[in-house]
View: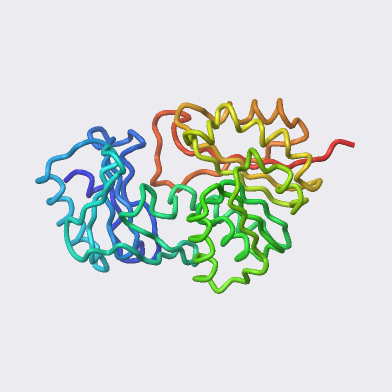
Length: 301
C-alpha cells in the first residue's frame, strides 16, 4: 500500500501515543477517508466512508507485522451510526493506558465515539505544561481533563475542570490518579458552562484559561453562536496579564473567525502566537484543521 511509505515505523516512535497516518488532511489523494492512530498496544484505523473487507484485512496485517509492540488492530466506522468498533486482528483490547509527553492517559475503545485523548492537541498540552507553573487554571470543556493533567505536571497551583459530562470528568479523575497527582488541587464541575458563569467566577480569578469547545452538540453548544459568550466574560474570570489558549476545531470556521471574535468581544486580549498541530496532521485545505491561538489578557485601566 502506498500509505506505508508515508508512515514512520521506527521502534522509537512507538513509545508514546500518536497519529500514524492522517488522510483527513487531503494531502494523500484516495485516502481522505482514513486515519490510523497508535494507542499502545492498539493500532486503530478510523474510516469515514466504506472500505472493502479485503482492503481492511490487508491493512490490518501490514500494521500488525510492521509494529512490533502491536497486539491488536481495530477499526472504527465513523460513517456508521454510533461509530462502532471492530477487531480486525489480534487481541480484543477495550482499555489501555498510553503515554504522551511522559504523562499517562486512560483510553477506552468501543464504548463511545472518542477514545479519551485527542492526538492533534499534543502540542497544546505540551504548551500548557510549560506555562502552568504556579497558575490557577480554568479548563473549559474539559472532557477527560488531559489539559488539567498537563497543568499539574507543570506545577499549577490549582485547576478547575468544567464539562457537562459527568462520565468524562470521572475519567479525568482517573487520569490524575494514573499520574499520582494531588487531587486536592483539582476541582471538577459537571455543569452547563453557559448556565454557570457565576459558579466559574466563584473559583477564580484565573491565570491561565484553556477553552477547547466542541463545534456542535445538539441542545448545548453551537460554537459559531456561543463562543463569544465566553470571550466577553473573560474580564470577570481572568487576572491581569493572564494567558489564554483558545481552540477551534470547526472545519467551517478559520482562525480569522477566532481573531475577529476576540477583537470584538474582548479587545483587551493581545494575540501572541498560534500553536501548530504535530507535523503528521498536515492540512492542505486552509482553515480546515485544528486552530489553537494564544492570547494575553490585559485588564483595561
